[in-house]
Length: 243
Ligand SMILES: Nc1ncnc2c1ncn2[C@@H]1O[C@H](COP(=O)(O)OP(=O)(O)OP(=O)(O)O)[C@@H](O)[C@H]1O
Ligand SMILES: [Mg+2]
Image 1: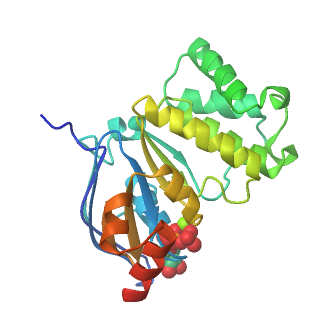
Image 2: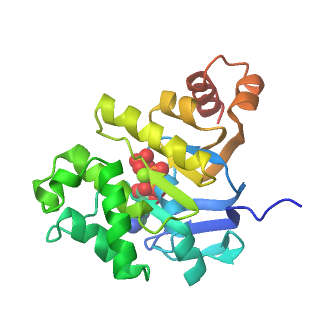
């Protein structure tokens, strides 16, 4: 029996106050365990889609299920870990507090949260900055903390909205390695990026979107075949030009 999809969107439509139609009847299924890339130009609707899934904005129409649960449910919230495009850290919390507070929001016991926070600080090389507040971290460190926080409660679906924007080469490689390991452990990953070589490297399954609509969706291999392209960059150019 096929397992319940990590994410199922049916007719997802978002019209912002003021009338702008950012998502137009979007259908999308992300299978459990997939490494999924959501690609498209600025303003395509990627962050809107993610914000809808995470119940941060109200959808206009349609349905969202997260591992079979309505996206507005506590279960769905518990199952998702989100690293947003905007680095939204609390400037008054230090690194360790940021992680511990997040654990608290997700109902982790104090001891469990402490353990997990230490683990995350080790993984993301933040141990030396445990007592440092967000504004005193470097940009790359803030990105790492954002990711560490998203992973604190061991979500089954990790959503990363441009996790490597403005990140140096070494950290990018390091993040790739870590995200790959997570995926290897069975975590479903949904990633957006403007670095097509990053998508090429990481994502097995890809959706190309523009103007709130799905242009193409398939495995990276099948897309390359369909668009008669050698690389994902070429697929992207062809798909966007044809649209
Ligand atoms: N709060 C809002 N009110 C009105 N329009 C909005 C709002 N947020 C986003 N939009 C519009 O919705 C469209 C999609 O924006 P969104 O942030 O989802 O794009 P994106 O694909 O994430 O782009 P980027 O690659 O630049 O991050 C844009 O035209 C944007 O101006
Ligand atoms: Mg965005």
